[in-house]
Length: 389
Image 1: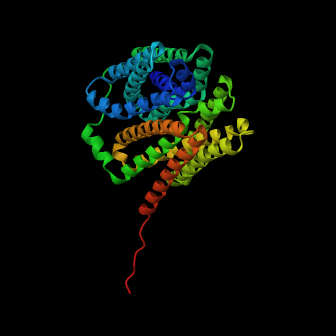
Image 2: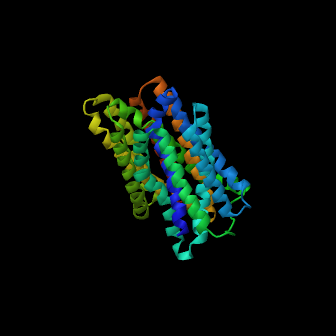
Image 3: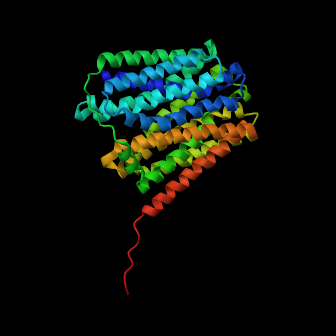
């Protein structure tokens, strides 16, 4: 039962992390800032997560895991409450950075605790249950949060997330035992894993994949509003994306087992890059039909983009099987670094060009990830043996 509360905490974190994309126009209007400036709320969150997560994990290495989880979720809840009452952009930015510190500490700790509290034969399922909290958030939490924000104002969405986080915190305080194992890697161990050549290449691929996706997802609602989507239809579009992401996550795992991680990751990147390019093509050249046609690339982006991720995770585990948790923690930081750069780049695209150009830029980034992935695979191929004579 304690793993359920870990999953609920992940659900709250996933909801807050992704729902902001649908709220940016409303936040921008309320605080009298540009949408591009509002988009830096995503960049600041992701960058704080990427940098803060490994530092906090090492700094709190010797503290009881139950206490660390309580601190992490309390920080996350406080950040949401601060956002709810923020009177200006600077305070809202600071509150999102506070949320990111809580999230970046909570998620890797929750995964480690899920393994510690589960019996050996149930550890895989325990980890899957915790990570499913993030997946379910894209399907249920994000559309629901966007709908709440449209009906009651964007501040109500932060209040909703704070309540969910508080329920998860109460459940963990009641259900988790003290004295859980403390096996967080030291900073030196993390750097040693990160210096592995194949791990470095994998991190570059993760960054480019995340950068491309968040160049456009950060400003998800902007082109939709330009097409005349109201709040209910934007929530529907978010539901389409979330459902596709959930399907893609499962499909990616199945294909990785059948086709191999390299082929599955390549297919995911090809599909995602295609979706991002088509997104811009629809907005640029089918303005009359874009209101309906835009849902196609949105679905394909979620499906292909999140089919790539489990294959990428599996490949990283194979690179460093003896330090898989460390490698995956570094990969998570790389992902959020990509989110941060993507949010900033998307804002620059909006400032210089138009929402219809976001897909071109995002697609080029994912294509770059594909090229690095293919080059890595080519270099890893066995070299032919030359026979003398």
